[in-house]
Image (tube, rainbow, N blue to C red; front, side, top):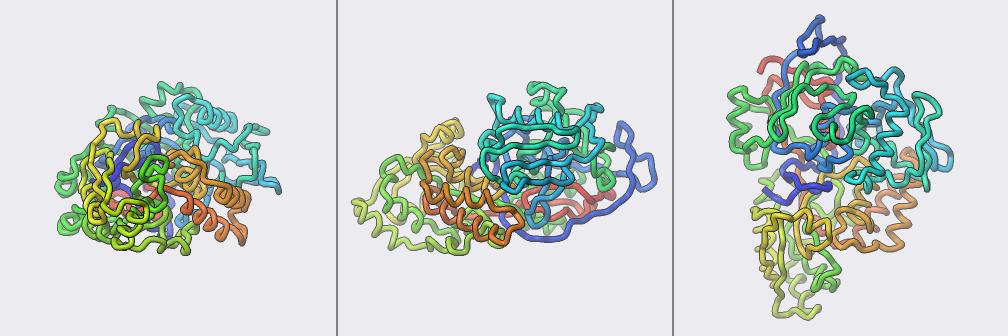
Length: 516
């Protein structure tokens, strides 16, 4: 167990991902009709039950409130998103089959598929999308306020299938922003309180029973826009599964799908189970608040960077399944900046010299406040000790509150990333970014680089270099020390067919289940 996953809430780091592999979608087409119990009523229709053992659960079934990036993979059972991303991490159609910008990039119109409905028959039209976006912007407990939608000044509905967003500045990132994490459209006939307890969307599955923190059951939604490619009849998700029982649970047929810790991979393979390394955008960090002494001295921050042995973390904590990381994006992804990749090689001698330069030749003592006493935190503590930094570990049961209040000088966490790279950069480095532990202004160089990237169309020849320039500018401002990244390590029985390799998503499009 390692740093918490922070996408506004605490989660489990073992579910993070980093690879940006580009593999083809597995799609199969067959007509499907389901009864209220999910039973098959037509030849070739949906069959089988997905029995998912999940170590994490949504903090809320309302995507406006749910802040955990990992938990959006579960809420995606019930909700369809305005857009999606494909196996290359590029924007792809969802509820909106296409979108168009004006030349200035200050207006974007999403064109919805005709005839969309929620499970109760309520129309999923432009008005429903407008109400969702406005609720995400204004609801007091919304976790989406800082997630790339503040640029939306107003929402118009010129027709039942057209939703026009008027923007305060050019922003070509919105088709990515409004993918799975931010764009899970809710039924406007349900109150926020109702959605908190039970999801109501237009996703591939419809909820049947929700037992908070324990179990959720779903049946296939025959009215889902891509129902022809959903071949699973029923889904049962069991929350809070004990990591030590996952392999035996899959062997016995209690489950047929789960997340997995790196330490369990060997046992899962020995049990003839399929281990899946799902690509994604995860990053684990040592977070430093540069407004709190002694970290307000640049030499101390640099010393911390050189003190971290990232390869040791990959070997000892990730069991070799992770990769060393010095930035928030995986190698191969369009926003990965090669020029920033090797900024800080492990060099304890240089770290000690930098501490001496800062006036700490005899070392220094700091408080290391964490969410849990984990092997990762203990290893980092030992690495800091090696260069003369005595970091006193303290477990804070109210850790998340302290972190988001910018009160922690030194801590660790992990993130699942965002569909939009600029959204990720703003979360990490922007002054209002939830993951900017100091809450400081990043400076004009970052602001200008972000503005340039936002104003660059996704299909422009300049997009890659402008996105990478924004990444470099963010890294130059930060107290974040990126350490390592893990893929989403998943495990399934052979009854479950291959999953689409879409970064950060767990999607059931084209997946079949035969037997247990």
